[in-house]
Image 1 (cartoon, one colour):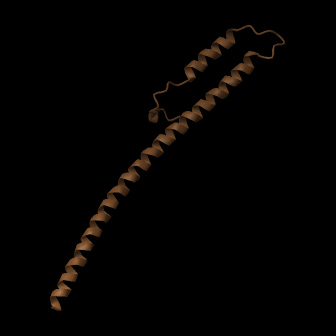
Image 2 (cartoon, one colour):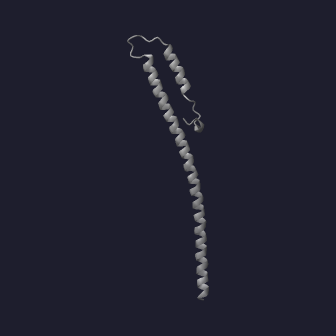
Image 3 (cartoon, one colour):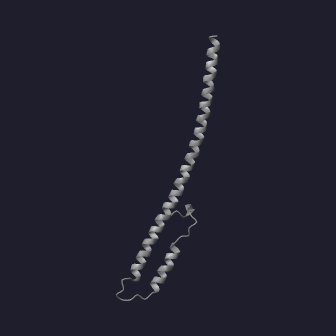
Length: 105
C-alpha cells in the first residue's frame, strides 16, 4: 500500500509483527488457557491491518497537503496578478481624470 509515497521515516511494522507471530507459534500454550496462538495471532493481524490503514492515511494526507500547497501557490500568483491589474486600473482612472480635466479647462 503506497510504499513509494511513504515519506514518514517510520519503519514498517510487518517484519516485527511477523517476528512476534513466529515467537507466538513457538510457545507451548496450556490447554485451557484464555490465550492461545490463534487468538494472539488474530490480534497481531488486526494490529497489522490498522497500521497499514494508518500509514495509508498518512500517505494520503501528505499527498493532499502537497496538492493544496500547489493550489495555494497558484492562488498567491493570481492574487499578485490581480493586484497588478488593480494598480494599472487605478493609474488608468487617474490618467482618464487628467484627460477629462484637460479637455474641459
